[in-house]
Image (tube, rainbow, N blue to C red; front, side, top):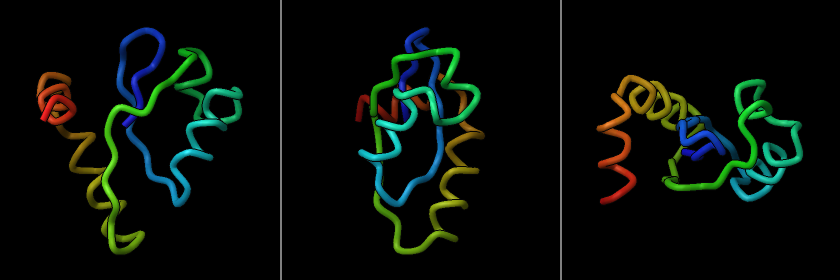
Length: 74
């Protein structure tokens, strides 16, 4: 999960998290983050498979911002 320059949160999946964050900050990531640079990694979790990662992404996106902030703080 990334915190964007405007304080919003972006959730996505990546094999190489550091590389993906760098791509976002270079303006080559998601359209959403391009307009909200810079971004910073605030939460991540390693998954066993791409399928598990996609399921977790969907679950995280369903959380409210308050719930996401609580997850980040924990």
